[in-house]
Length: 113
Length: 114
Image (cartoon, rainbow over all chains, first blue to last red; front, side):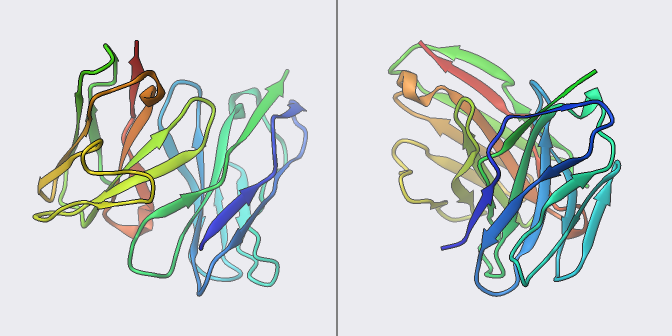
């Protein structure tokens, strides 16, 4: 079945460092891909998404490109801030009609001043 | 994007009791889902709430333990029945309205069973 694998955390960076959180997926057909962020004590917020191969999603300085050849959707940011400290979830929606999201295990990012 | 009101935001319950969580959406949505997030873990889909028919449950989740109602296109409830400490989790409602905005999540219900 469909699945999502994220790099293990926690990831600890200094402010202004470059961030990459790896995400790979297994799915049949052409899934849609998402990154969600969960700040401490809060619910999930959509960070960015891509619905087809080579699409680049971007928001708040974060980017991710849908790479079908490598089945990946890695999250990147050029310069992280302390306020980016959160848990990041990669997710996919399969091309079937079930509509459900399948989540990766989440990666905790801690940014130190 | 759709706005979700999920209640209660948190509760502490005695084992053996039941808790009903409500999810109210400000617009009609085609699909509604219920997820569980155990402490420090990712989200696991419990079921898809179907309007006017029985919910579709994922493997490992059963209707007797997690009965779900969805009487219309803007409202759903999830009940956690006969609770045990292992049910202590965050429960989240999610909806799909306009796919341009992806899936929207409620703020979650943080449940502690003692």
